[in-house]
Image (cartoon, rainbow, N blue to C red):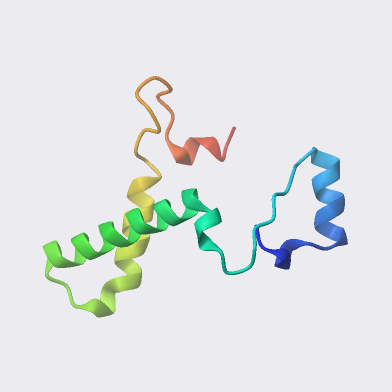
Length: 90
């Protein structure tokens, strides 16, 4: 998490819900491997969707939205039978 979120409002929110913020070094994207991998997966899916569909690059934003939408409805694991979209509502 970057320092742009470090202020009194978030500090109070964090404390009230017992959250722990772990800040990263600025411009060190290597410290956030999960987000980096997720972004790579989304961008690879977007490139594939555009190439397969034959649509021009001007539809990039729509392709990204479609890939993210589809990813949100793929099972997290076979054991849990939960999709990411359901996690937000629990």
